[in-house]
Every structure is written in C-alpha cells, then in structure tokens.
Image 1 (tube, rainbow, N blue to C red):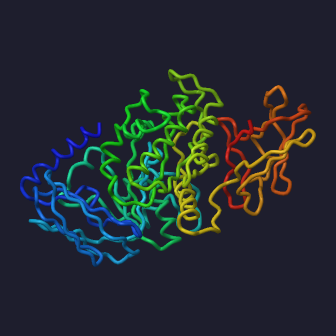
Image 2: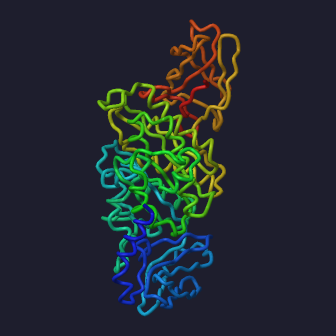
Image 3: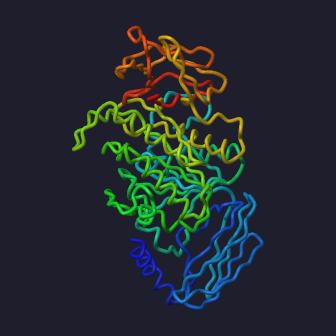
Length: 471
C-alpha cells in the first residue's frame, strides 16, 4: 500500500518536475502556521540535480535534488511569532509563500463528530446568553492568529500551484472546518497568545482501521501476522501519510461510533493504541500528545444491524477508550456524558465545549497551565465498610457535587453473587458512599454503566465524573 501511494505521488509530481519547476506538497502554503521550538522539515520536487534553497526566519538552507527529483531540508527551530513573514523557495523558479506565522500546529482526525463543521454549529438552537454565544461564532470569528487547513482526500497528494490550502479561521473557510478543531484552537490561543494552526483530516462514518498504516498494523504486537478487517490504510495513505514530514505539536482524535456499532470494545483499545504508536513513529516523536473524545450516550441497543447490541455495549466501549490512557503516556480523553440532548442523536451539538475540554488537557499537560482542571472525577480506589462501599476519586478539585442538586444517579452495587442493582449514593468529604437495602455484603460498584447514562456527579470545575466499574 505504501509503495502504491508513493507511485501515485510520483506521477502527480512528474509533469512539473520534468519542466524543471520547483513544487511543494500541498500542506505548504500562504497563511500557514509553522511549528515553533522544533526543527522544521521542508521538502518537495524539482528536476534531477537541481539546486534548491529555502529562506525563512533569518535562515537560508540549500540542497540538491536526488536521482528522482526529491529534495528535503531541515530548518532550525523557530521562536513564536505572530508577525506575518514570507518563505522563499528557489530553484529554477521561485515560490514566495506569504503571511506565515510561527506557533503551534495540531492535527485533528476521526469520523463525523470531528468533521462536524462550523456551518452545522451555526444552525444549533440555544437560549440567548450574555456575551458571545458560541453558536453564533461565525458572526464574529476573525482572529488572524488562528489558521486552518482542511484535508481533501482526493487532493492532498496533488501539488497546488496557488498554495491556497491554509486560511485565516473566518468566513467561508471556517464554515467548512471542524468545529471541535476550531474551538480547541480558540481556547489555546486565548490562554497562551500563541498562533495556532489546525489541520482537519476526518471522514464521516469511518472506522478506526483505515486510519492506521499497513506497517503500523504489521509492527503492532497485537496485530502482527494477523488479518485485520476494515480496509487498513484506506484513509491513512491519502489523508495522513502526506502530512508525516510536516512538523506538528500533537493530535486530536474523535472517533469510535462506527466501531461501537460492531461491538468492537475487545480490540478497540489495541487498535487505538496501535494508531497512536504508529502515528508517533511516523512523526519521529514518541512523546507527541494525543487527546481524544469519549463518544456520547446513545441507544445502540435499538440499532438494527448484523451485530446484536445491548445497553452495556457502550459502557464497555467507553472502558476500551479509557484504557488507552492507562497504557500510553501523553494521552488523555474528555468525557461527554453531559453533552447530549437526545439519546437518538450521535452528533452532540456542544462542539464548543468538547473543543474547550480538549484544550484544557493540552493547556495543563503541554502549556504549563497547571492550575487548570482538565478532567472530571476519575475512579481511584474503593473500600468496603460493613454494608457500604466508599469510592475515592482523583480530580475532585475543590469538591464533588450533584449538578442538578438531586440524589446521585447511575450508581449500581453488587453482592457476592455479582448481580448489580441500583444503589443509593451520597457525597461525604469528597468521597461517594454507595449502598443498597438488600446488599449486605457488597463486592463491587458500577457507575454510568448504561448507554443512557447522563449522571449528575461532577467536580466543582463543572466536569462530569468518568464512567467506571470496580470489577
């Protein structure tokens, strides 16, 4: 598959190379953001043996193309800059890329919830609120320090002589861009004052397998020498591989619904772990942050598919997603159990909140904003005392509370027979005490272990508790 991709890429470039034109991959263009504080790759095509130079940020590097007309060079790390600058690439022809900033570059990928555009966001109906309503973001978005690049799977491998792929995040360009990606960038820029470049590469309805390279599966201890269903590399080759050399800060991922419908919780942890590890290897950085979104509550058990689902299918999938953050460092996720209005809607409209929660993870872990509360209450340990189980949480942050001020919901408890029943749960000194009238010897607790779960347990930062089971 990789060889086929490279062959097609060479064909796309061939005509220009034969005409001695220096050409650039589509990801380089006017209005782009370059990653700060990391060496930068710049590459392209020209005629065989042609000398090519690149000038940017006070640097000038020169190289010659190889026997196939490929050239590549590395610029030294650049400091943050929101002053528009030009990059000049020169061989037998000259390309001048304008209005370039230096800041942070993130790639967001996945299926329809990541692809969900700002145009759709603008159609959401919400009560009037004071100040700028995120639903109406298109009416006032005009920050020149947020830039966006939307990947077209049929176009990314082709050169663009006009170098127009990047845009300032406003007007028609923003209307077609990922809402999650934009609101993530907005929050990061607001709290750091650093230019942000977002690249969106997502396909509605896609499973995870097509986003993993064939070599990624081949090198995975979980999938090596095994046949993998789901068209591996179908989207990776045209939509991710051409970006591999482009220097970035990290990744955002919002996908899972298509795999949940297949009852894929057993292998999804392994697949997402494989994806993350293979992407990091492709970018030659084992520590690139990777943040992802747990899918929302939904009536999967009502679906009419070949695979029979029940009301526990989704919680098991939530667990599969959560387990990835326990396996790989520099990974974390946001919980969305509170961000859905209807259990028959796979696409929550609260994309501004999802983007913001992803930004909280990055701000805390990557931008030194240590005081930010980035996660909701997370199960830490349990203690059995007589007929009760005491649950301790991480991320309690100034205390736990019931968001609607009603008794805590979606707690279940089991006795020695392992059968779970609805439980009473109360908050005491930042712990939750769980019990049930007919359970005298409790052994385990489940929380939000149902596809309809929209529980009311939050921390004081306003973030929902993560679903869990004590097993």
